[in-house]
Image (cartoon, rainbow, N blue to C red; front, side, top):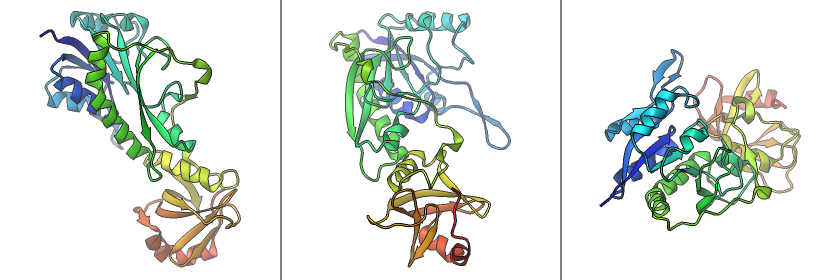
Length: 317
């Protein structure tokens, strides 16, 4: 039986289920894995391999880690020697130039964490949560030179749960994409799938998340908006405010009862609960972390800070 030759491009944990499934497929042969270079991590800036590299090594796949792929003839020649039928790209981190996109016999497939054309770009899961969407999903598409604008092959919907966060949706979509990757790749290679052009008039884009995006503006954001931000930005960059000159992270929260009002950014203790006013409505933190302390539930936080809250109830604006 003929096996199609595949080169896999991926870097983050999101890509691992797809790599695992493709490597186990009887119809496909993963010849190599391309991942970002090892990155400096932590206070001592120790070089750490990417999650995809670590996993590829456990299943004995060769890993290529070019610093850049544009105008890199040595890297191009290495890929060409592999005689690839298909590139599969998921959460890689560099844009593939046309010369590389044209190298595989059947082109390149990308697995993207949204229902395109919605949320093209780097942070589709976060933006689905930020906007309070009730559905998201993954899209398998043919790649072209533009960002997430290629013809679509398969879309698979996922219904977002009320308690879903970035972390839970990320894991669920990664598993979903991985489970479907071999079948979609093989059907595409066999000519079973019909590519569908995206309707660019319905497209939205989303950029990278920055470290300070999680700062809470109590006067400008409603309780629902803040709750959505907490869901989208936990665990990174986290949603945070300031209190007494220190950063206070809110790691999870629920919305207060309708009609409850409190001055934006003001804390009020009600039994074992902590209530905070927003532009519209209130939120009740469920898990918090004060700078220099471990994360804790609200009751534990209040036990250590009750008197200080009474004396200084105002949070950063």
